[in-house]
Length: 250
Image (cartoon, rainbow, N blue to C red; front, side, top):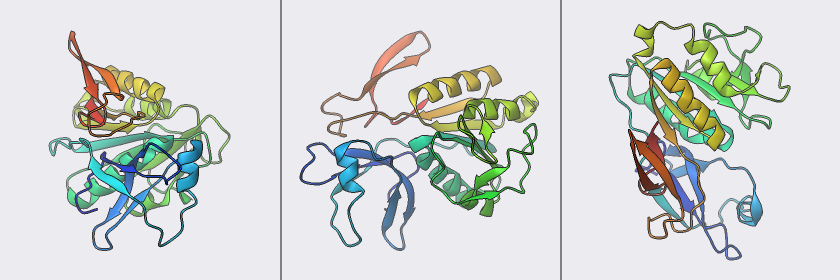
């Protein structure tokens, strides 16, 4: 757990009845207690089996794997955008940067179509340009003085009704370009959300790093089952999410 950094993941064995391991992003680590935390949505028999393990059960995993988020100390305003099970790595990063960098001012925007699996509170931290009625936040971030707002297409009390990228866009649209030049967006979530985040970053001329979610068989770059197309200007290259990513520049 001491080696795990935000954006990296572990390849977790879900039991003898599942052939393939599952890639899970780190939500939190505690080097003193030598523990790691994961958050996942139960989809399929593998994660169903993993959800039934008990305290004291032995679990095999490989990790940390991959290239995580890379923070530029000159970017004083990190912005975290997470959707669904893409929330853990950016939440981990938000807490990590808050602990290790004194000169930053962070903001977070998270979206979910199911009730948020975190303790929620009403925020006292203001974010300009947003509706005051959209005031729910995650307690862990509120306690660390990180302004955060939540979005969903469902009718959740205190949450913006719409896409999380719309919420972030409302805030960004109220900033002068001199402030935007200090921003870097870190995002993880479903593919369509990441596409929208990429457009958002391009429209506001801010730097952006995306952590991709992808199925994989080996997690060591051997099977090439998790390859994605990555553009470098006019050039396109095939990259493996497991070892080249999962974090890429937008």
